[in-house]
Image (cartoon, rainbow over all chains, first blue to last red; front, side):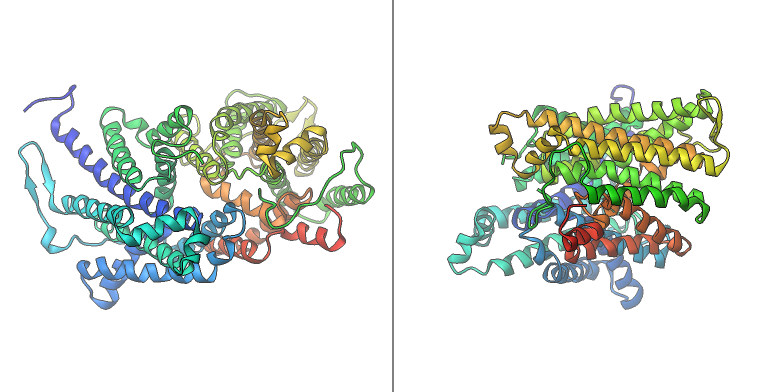
Length: 295
Length: 323
């Protein structure tokens, strides 16, 4: 076997894989944030809590309804997305005419409530969630051992990200969506129900976060605070990528995950902060973000 | 920006306080002077530190319209420096507090220089992310003591002759520091400089077209806000003889936003009222664990949906005078 700068290949590829896994969560979450921000002009601070709700959804479905992982993968995003629709109809709807910051504050408050309620019930320790039987074990690739479940997470999230990109950039529905982002009044004048589109978009963004949560459940433990720290990193990812482009969000998400993984190999002390440092550098060079448009 | 939908009220550029504001101010000072004889001074000191912190934060959101979601980094890191200075270097309290404040000012300069490149929502996300970076630094650095924090910090002797071990003496020192910060902020927002930063809040492109270098103004206010937050943090560390990760973590940044929102964004007395209301509330809920977080969340939601002017903002609207 070969060594790379004195790092054994198992460690290098292991961290690369971990980086890709983290990257797929960054990509799915920042994608959802970007889609929501595009139409609602709200930064959804509840996103981390909704990711956590997705994971808890899977846990509840297994615990109380005996539904397997595969059912949870469909049901949990639908249920959490439905709660998102309720939130949009009851609360967010009233904020569109106000300063954007109020949306941030409201969703921050909602995140505190959701996380507090679950922490009351389950404490800070995590609940284990088993990997589904079909994905147990792994494959030996020669240079590394690839657990099947981790491969599945990367494939699933890539598929979902690319499908979202396709729908928004290449279909008629996506064209309406992009048009409504540019000029909602005009699109409404053409007879398209923009308020309903806004509601469904929020529901979709939230469901995406919940989907990521179900994928994450077997890897990390299902814990009330699992989304809180993640969402801050995702905010940095969004600042780096800029929210103007869907593909930009996907590429930035995966790319930063890999960079973080590599940092763990070469300079572990900085692995927590490397994304924030990159954010600072990007702000110096290109304040609008790598894929951003200057407004 | 934050004033969208309502106006916070115009403030005349006079160096003298309008008479009714002077009365409210004197009333506040009078209450603070007698309060420690009726209420536990340590609780009052905590509330005063948070009040100063919120006033500093309000300077930024209320008068320049910049929402920082990372103000805990100034409070917390100043606390660490003050605690380390007093305990390890053996600095007297006045120098420990000054050292903490200076470090907060420096961090404010660097963070502000980066963050003012973006506005609105991005500004909030950038400050939050940079604060998280400072948090990880404090978590990993040796001198902060990690999860334990810096404990048993000596309060020491102020100026060599005021023994701060008595809570009552300490209280009046904290009150003096608070009043200094409060009056400084009052003076800044009622100066010609204050008029310009309010112009930036209302319409930045117009302020630019009038020839003002708005980025300079924003940076100066950001550094001032960071410095006063640092003053609050250093004082808090000396009072409680403790510097810990709680003060530098993101929930603390959320808490100062909540205090200011509850009291009234862009009001003079709002952050003080907000601090006393919220700290009392948390004091009573403290035994109930996560209920503190839930209550904070509920207050956020209610304030944003129905109570955007905050307590003092609503009173000011009723009496039709800016407070």
